[in-house]
Image (cartoon, rainbow, N blue to C red; front, side, top):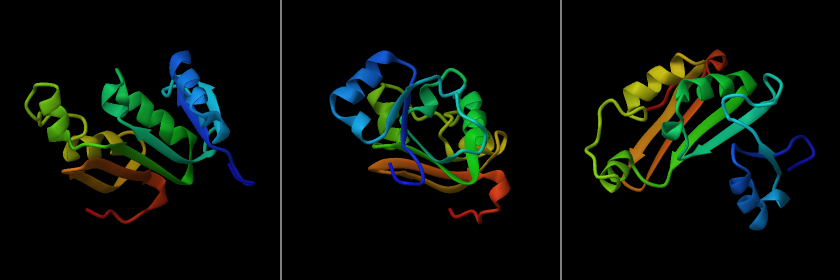
Length: 144
């Protein structure tokens, strides 16, 4: 936390927030019990969203992306992250890499664009997956 803002850790379960508090995460920011598709926040108030291993586990990921766009300021950034690539995660779950996977670049780009985001970085590398997006209204140059 700083003088100009706060860090929020959001989860839909008490158990995860309790676990975060137990390891001291409440000292790094505020922990908020909320559904990420219906955040109790005003519009355009968030400057950064970091979602680690979350989007492809949501029953309605487009609802989350839309909500995150609603709460993001014009200079906001969305960062989607996972510590392994899509192929490794598919293999770990005993399935082939699916071209219909939400996190495949064309699918993610379309999902982001249809919910108010612009994809500015996409890396599905051997050691990680990361995608960065900015609000579509920000006019940021796309890097690939």
